[in-house]
Amino acid sequence: MSGLGKGITTASIGRLLKNRGYRVTAVKIDPYLNIDAGTMNPAQHGEVFVLRDGGEVDLDLGNYERFLDINLSSDHNITTGKVYQTVIEKERRGDFLGGTVQIIPHITDQIKACIRHAAAEELEENTHADVCLVEVGGTVGDIESMPFLEAVRQMHGELEDHDMVLVHVTLVPVDNMGDHKTKPTQHSVKALRELGLHPDIIVGRSECVILGGTKKKISAFCDVPPRAVISMATVPDIYHVPMEMEKEGLADVVSEYLDLEKRTPDTEWYHLVSREYTSRVTVAIVSKYGIEDVYISIKEALKHAGRALSTEVDIRWLDAETFDPAELADVDGILVPGGFGKRGIEGKLQAIQFAREHKKPYLGLCLGFQLAVIEYAKNVLRWADATSEEMGPGLHVIAILPEQEEVEDLGGTMRLGECAIDLKENTLIERLYGHNGITERHRHRYEVNPAMIADLEEAGLVFSGRCGNRMEVCELSDHPFFLATQFHPEFTSRPTRASPPYMGFVTACREERNRES
Ligand code: GLN
Image 1 (cartoon, helix red, strand yellow):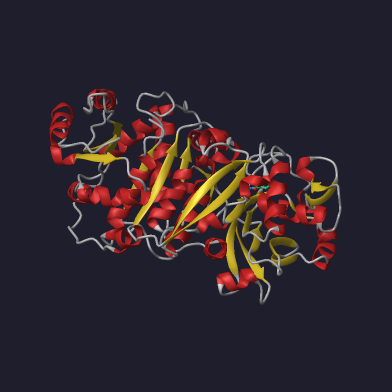
Image 2 (cartoon, helix red, strand yellow):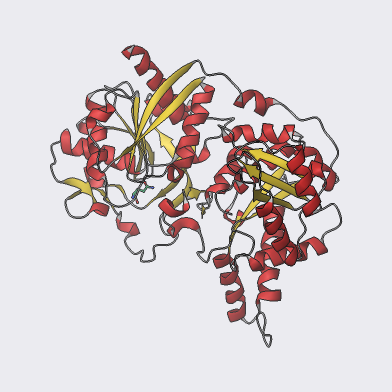
């Protein structure tokens, strides 16, 4: 079922193999009819992750990129919408002329073709994956996931022995006596069998560790050896999951099924994620969404930087709509993330004004960048009606550029994906990256209005990163740390390689904390 941890399980299996020197790629199957996650409400579905090529995809792809330190393309997120769109286009072209187009074989063939295509794609230049992980989202028994499970069943028959291993992730609840219940697992395995699929490995998700007795029971009912029943108990940090799975012997079982040579794992990952913290900071994130899953990449990027600096980052989530600047008095830094629409704008502007005037570290991302520009226009230039075209009438400091005006569809039409950014010499952003010619990922529609740049700069706002006529970074020179980016640095942050703006921000928060104490 959703929210169980299939994505983290998938990413962790990949990490175990990567630690053994195998090259790993991953595919996420989302059985919904949307072409991609771009038009979906993040409050319901979680963050929309953005890939290098501009693909707007499920947040699990973010986990794959972070755990495996790879860059994936949009082909690695397969949805029912994409599969049907391709098959229908082929039908219109006449590719199936004379034939009746059906779910089996046409849709299932297309699904298999998509999986094979993604698996064969270059990981880096001239490097291909040894193993491709395929995560099927949804729940066994859902109507929407049927064609995907059928495609997986067919693939199993088509591949050589030892070329495929099937891992089933199930919920193992604990009753009020503290006993693990195996019934849900028995039932879901039964449902899988009815579809012709037999799991080789069962990963039991539970609040607490599943021990030998329960493993034996699952083994007996579900026909997998006890050592192929893996306990995945809740841990405080997702990056610890691969370590837990290592202890459970999952890598050995997977290697056996795939006939991979047994290798001693590299331990760099474990050293990295078990590093002790020596200091601590509190960061306020001011947003309109109540759920943290919307900002999972930001949360992770703060954690990556924190870990690199041995600093634990506590996040205080503040609701932009009920916001009161007094809530910021004891925080060490303020972050305004991306967002859409005008709800909560006033609160976010107040938070930015507070950060600017009280010299608190500020990191603005996407909408947080646009609002930093608006706040400056309003309160420093005294342009009272400064706003963004997105928010309605007023002085449009943030606007649609003339070249963007034609666009009518909302799906996939924003400025998306990676582009190169030119950094200004001797600025904060240049110091943080340590070089020019950076590339970062985008997902937005509106831009700083070119007609107002000169006035803003004259008043003291420094645009320190640009991409042609588009403003990418702004900062203040008379402030310890005031930095905002139109791009989303969090999408390229990795546990092994923290993002420079986040490193700068957490460092500044730590200095702020030391100043206070
Ligand atoms: N809503 C803004 C825009 O479309 C910012 C988008 C974002 O924060 N991702 O430009």
